[in-house]
Length: 94
Image 1 (cartoon, rainbow, N blue to C red):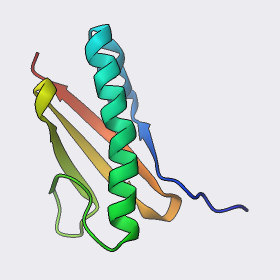
Image 2: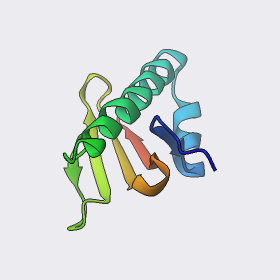
Image 3: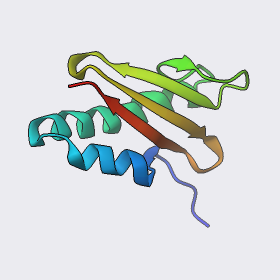
Image 4: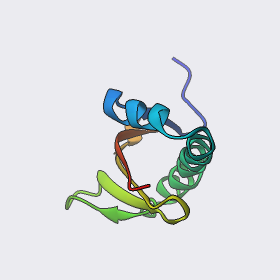
């Protein structure tokens, strides 16, 4: 098996439903945010640092990060063994 070099994001059915229900412009901005979250978060984790946001547990696996420009919040789980951020939920107040 070839190891993944880059981190990715994967949305749960709930998060994907929210993402695709957003207005087109907002969906585009959120998609770019998630892509950047994988890049920045993965780089931080690889360097031994915490990923963006605030921890939701004591083990540093579950996180919540605000998307200030969109008045949104993304809840995610770090799956370090497969280099993936699993997006559990997206809350948008717009």
